[in-house]
Amino acid sequence: SAVISQKPSRDICQRGTSLTIQCQVDSQVTMMFWYRQQPGQSLTLIATANQGSEATYESGFVIDKFPISRPNLTFSTLTVSNMSPEDSSIYLCSVDNTGTSQYFGPGTRLTVL
Amino acid sequence: DQQVKQNSPSLSVQEGRISILNCDYTNSMFDYFLWYKKYPAEGPTFLISISSIKDKNEDGRFTVFLNKSAKHLSLHIVPSQPGDSAVYFCAASGGTTSGTYKYIFGTGTRLKVLA
Image (tube, rainbow over all chains, first blue to last red; front, side):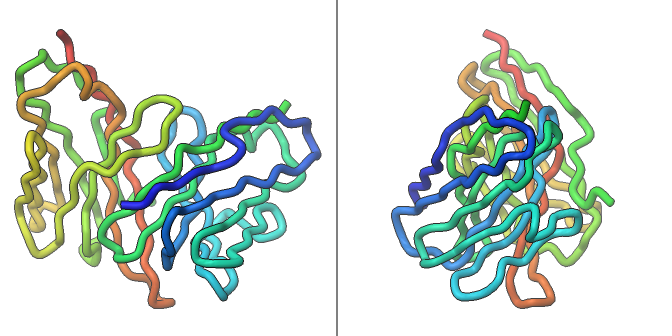
C-alpha cells in the first residue's frame, strides 16, 4: 500500500476564486487519479494523471476548470478554478500501480460560499 | 449510464451476524472488482478485491463472491462488528483505449451494525 497525504484537508472559499489541492505519495506510483464526491453521492472520477503526459479528463470535466499537474512520480496537484457553490465537494486523490487496487488520500473538503 | 450499481442505500445488521452487501455491473470487460470502506471525513479504505477469473476471495472476516454470469458481486462480513459501520463502495476496474485503466464506483451502501 501507499501513504498518501493531501493539503489542505479542508477550506472555505469565495465564489470566483481558485484553490489548488496537493497530493503527496510516499513512494513512486505510475497512475494518480483525482475524484470528487459530492454530498450523498458516489466517487466520480475527474481525471487520470500520469507523469510526463497530459491528464486524461472524464466526460463533464475540462482542463480549464480542473487543471492538473504531475511533475514527478510522487506528487500531483488539482486546481479548482473559478469556483461556484456547485463545486463544494470532497476532492480525493488516489494512486495505483497495477490496476488491481487503488489507495486513497484522506480527501480535501471544499466549501464554496 | 451507471455501470456499477449498489441498489441498497442502507443496511442494518445485528452485531455478530452476517452482513451481505451487493453490487451489480453491466460491463463484462471489467478485470477486477474491489470493495472499499469509508468513514466520514476520511478517504476510502481498500478492503478486498477479486479478479474477474475467480469466483471467491477471502480475507479474514471479509469474503467477496463474484457471479460473472449474473454480473453480480457481493461482500460478506462475518461476524459483523460495530466498527464495521461505514459506507461501503464497490468498484470495478478495466483497461481503456489509451492503454491505462480506470475505476468505476458504485453509489455506496451505508452499513450500520447494531450492538
